[in-house]
Structures are given as C-alpha cells and as structure tokens.
Length: 47
Image (cartoon, rainbow, N blue to C red; front, side, top):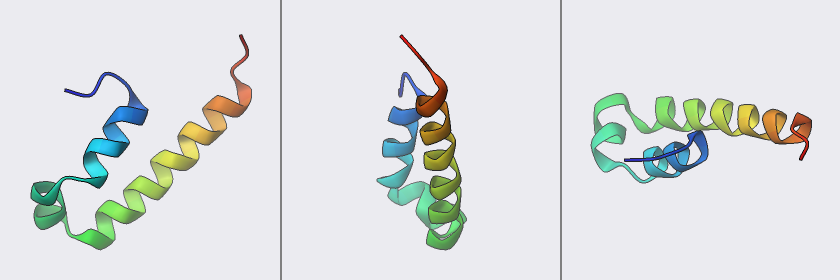
C-alpha cells in the first residue's frame, strides 16, 4: 500500500490492472496532473 501521493503515482504508473480498466490515455493524463500537483507542493514546502 503506498504511503504517500508520490508512491501512489509510481504504483499507478505500473499498474496493468488499472491501465486495462481505465485505459492508458486516462491513466497517463491523471499521472500528468498528479505529478504537476506534487511539483507545486514541493516548490512551496519549506523545511
């Protein structure tokens, strides 16, 4: 079970079951959105 959004993105990217169910086009688009969200989060989070 993924413990973070970043781990979830990696798991989804490699999931043949979800790609078969939703289709590559949908999964790739969703991953693009989530990776952009992660990028924005990391750009604004400070230590």
